[in-house]
Image 1 (cartoon, helix red, strand yellow):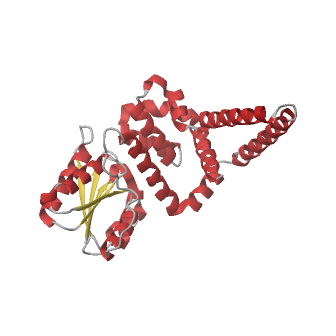
Image 2 (image 1 turned 90 degrees about the vertical axis):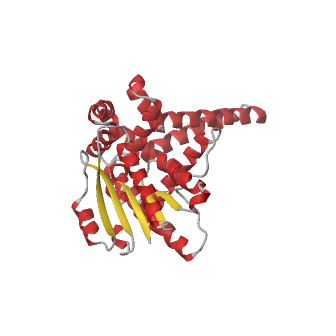
Length: 308
């Protein structure tokens, strides 16, 4: 028996994947923003056909993080009412990790099993192992934080979430991206030509230098190549260059995540408006739109370099 609290404004239809596999003892609580509703017909059919009990909550609007506060309040109510069952918060918002950690730290209320996941399907995998009494690695839940390691843990969790997403359907995603970007092969070919020319120049210069000079030059060349790759492939640097002083550092990270998660310009527009509101979202989107395709190519190159 498990409860799933869905931050639909954050995860959309992707977060509901796996709902058709739930049992009648499970309950699903979908929190959505009436101003931003993107439920697809196939997903709506899965919701109405699933065995679990489903309840919808239209979150009040007008304040920042209104949905987050309402979902967290409902979590407390459910635990006080039902006690020891599994509670899964379906959201990419890491603020919910602090709510889960708060409950687990209260020894007087028992040992609540509260977890955070980006989709129902991932939560099911964890819950199945939990029910059988076996240990498993929590790939989404964030460990205890301190002021010193807060930033480092944040990056680790982002990496863990990304691994789960790629593991789930890596091959289909890579294939789709490569089909949409016709110039990917040209990028790889040019990269090979540049590396070949650099190698030839390097060999000619090495013949005229001592072994010590050779090692020094190789290290310097490697350092420059890494810096050039970071400058070319870094989405964060590109977003900063495009928007400059118009965007704050915290917004910059969120915009980079939205660019990676979007499938096309229209999808990016909807996600940005959902996250930052109509007025602010349009300002940000107008800056990103002209270089959207370029940023998606950077993402492909980034994936290729990691694979190498």
